[in-house]
Image (cartoon, rainbow, N blue to C red; front, side, top):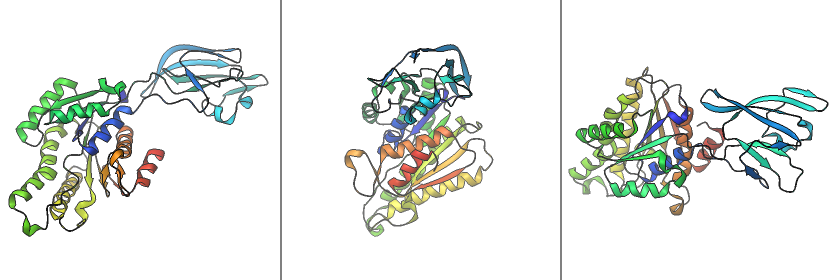
Length: 344
């Protein structure tokens, strides 16, 4: 299954954490920028007086490509920063080399201004977003705000559905509305709940307060999982990822005890699912965040950017999983490592 065929359901996608994940998923596959000092032109171009010939479309795995032949390029004459864009020659000779390569569709030429017309192959200018993303929320206003946060070029890849996944009836109705809108779901990312609660020590709280916390952090996660997991359960290429918080491991500070109770319940539920369904084809992932999360404009020391976190989770979804996994992220350096190394 190619990434362009994948539809990711982002539960909680209209929240702070979820919106970063949605944006990152939609931005996957956007065009790369030209190297510094270069311009990009979408065409088959002359290369030092020789031709780059485009041929028939081919498919290599999940990547659509155009078969290309280019010749007469002197590999040794290319600068170091240019070689990264050319596949190393398979046949070399005194006058250069001849090489056949499958180049992803939409690849273009990069030209150094003022130079002798030295061209190199770079990323697609008009490459389409890989993932389609669907978001369900009971709050239409939050869905509309989410649309203002994503890139205009990816708007057509985002589907929003008004629905309540906190009740069994609401989740089932939301599922039917979702399938009517997108047809299928291949991956699910759940970031339901809230990131902070500071209502005071337990003796000052009511049963209603505790019930609300449990409903928000645990029961909505269970109800939505029960409704949507059957959509991906039997697909080995599918993933179901839970975004949880490290608050379940300890009391963060006085007055936040109910947050710890609710977060610990969510952590336990994820553990139960991994142990109860060890052989299920769909892989269950858990990303445990041991830090606060905020959008860039509200960042404070020690917090994680929701956009950086989104990129890490999108990379996890992109590469799929071979087994149920738990990933812990405690600081911005962890996310940078994830983004650069594409591994958690």
